Each structure stands twice: as C-alpha cells, then as structure tokens.
Image (tube, rainbow, N blue to C red; front, top):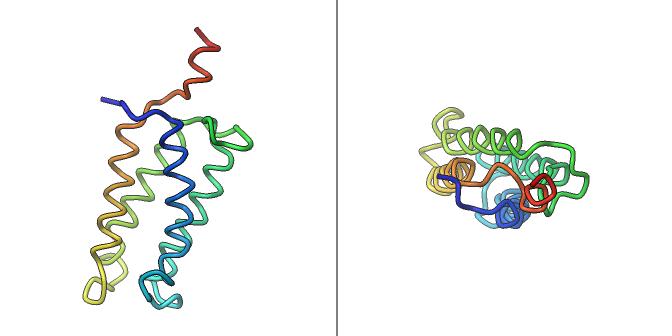
Length: 122
C-alpha cells in the first residue's frame, strides 16, 4: 500500500542525499575506502535524481516518480548490502544496512504520482 505523499518523499530525499554525502565525516569513515565513498556517491546521485524528479520538490521535473522510486530501491539495496559486497562488514555495517533498508521501504510505500499532477490530470 502506497501511503507516503511524494512531497514528503521529496523532503526526505533532499535530507537523505545530504546525509549520505556527509556520512564519512559524520561517522569518521575512511573516504578512500568503500565504506566511505559508496554512501558519498549514492548521496550525490540521490541529490541529482531528486533535482530532476517530477514531484513537488523537483527543480527540473523530467524523471517520472516511478523511475525515481525504482532507482531509490536499487540504491537502497546496494547501500544495505555494500558492507558484505565490498568486504567492510567487519569494520562497519549497521548504518549502511539501516539506511539502505529504509530507502528500499520508502520506495515501496511512496505514492506513484505527485499530488499536483494528480489534480491536474483529474
């Protein structure tokens, strides 16, 4: 069931993108190793994706919300599994796992159409 408005998702996207970009500094992670650069890269990607997404907080509204949510889910799965895929689970795994699974969950419960587009179409 999709109950999270796209506006709320957009707010969380901007915050999550900034948080992931700052992750290595906030958690004292090595920026030259996967545990640091994977969240930074995904954070920057989320910010770019959000900038171009067709929702209330998108700046250049070109990417459909369905595509955005697919990318969010895949990025979350990558982040959640990255400690094991890239071999740093022995140093840190919980923040990557929790935030990654949160992103996957958000991609599954966010509405597919922004409210301002739904009203215009109806």
